Length: 214
Length: 214
DNA sequence: TAGATTGTTAATCGATTAACAATC
DNA sequence: TAGATTGTTAATCGATTAACAATC
Image 1 (tube, helix red, strand yellow):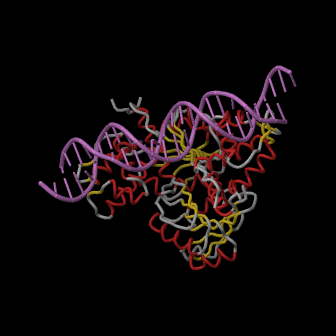
Image 2 (cartoon, chains in turn green, cyan, blue, purple):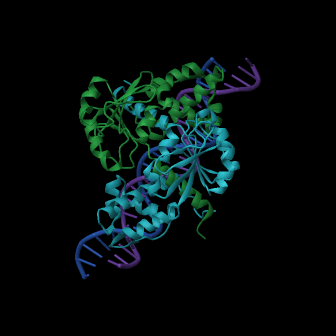
Image 3 (cartoon, chains in turn purple, red, blue, cyan):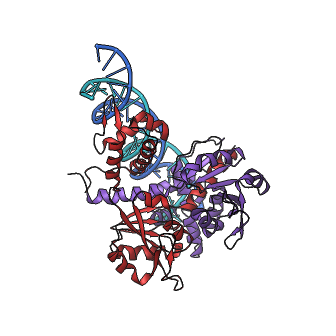
């Protein structure tokens, strides 16, 4: 559907720009430049201009970018000019931590349901928002009833694929996968948050910086 | 120190190979090939061979790779042939969830301490491992005493930079940052786990697939 | 031997960066 | 106007992939 294919690194950077623009606005500023954004994010100014130019002309030559307009534009591009309802599968450590995470709510991601297979958890509520925990049997019903568009997988690795399949069957639009497991899926957008990969990548670099081959 | 600079994507993929090799071993297999690994990970076989060739010759022509030897080799490369002690700063939702996370322990990352500034939490213990929560004042002392080499930042964004600075002062070797905040650091390896960026990247793609410019 | 699969080089591809005319 | 900074093109850079000789 998209006219040009946007490279994945661009998508990630757009989210960084959005955060940075918010910070600058909170500091009371009105405008910024690709130079300033680049310095704050350790990126080249030309990269920021190029990334933005995929989507339109948001700046004024000689003047830079109006921050409020840039924020609004980025929110349209990132799809967060509307709120998104989120359902989390797995009410364990990670699932419950996420359902209390303020960072998501701030950007308009609203966790409206958790799902778990443990009968002792079903029917209880999590966190200050009192988010209900439902049975996995209710997955499709609640996804439809509560207009859940994003599913979060926070179950053990060995259950992740079957849960993902069920989410897709229920018509979910996107999945954020926290399970340390590669998922094979069609007709859905997938984003992995892989904590154990991040730790291994970290120790790889620590190791390499002190144990270089001779 | 390293003889060749290893591209960052290679580091991430090495961790994926390690996980995949473990899965194959658990299935009772003895050998694999770059073809099989590629199919399982949706990567080209030649990329896997190229990645591994940065570090040595682990296979046999015509035969493929011995899984046990490949796992051992990958663990040496990734630095997880030894255990790592981890300290988590911030005993909130994310910090406590991480300290209970089995996925890390399995790879030899052992959370030995949490740090928090909330006096009512200090002196208490978290999870089945009974991990102690210390005062932030004890940060450097405990890092040395407990041989903590990896610090995890699980505090609000506005405190992340100062905590990171203190971790570096205490001589930490690597930092995994969960705060939604760009950190400016020297003399330390940094890895970001940015949950809110992942969500925004997801909705960007959902949005783009249904709202392509006309 | 014939078939399979590696390690490695060379070709391709895509992303980043520099440069600059346009223009506020 | 002169200075600043954009949007965009062209050049550069680096990563991925294909191809293939080596060899089990």
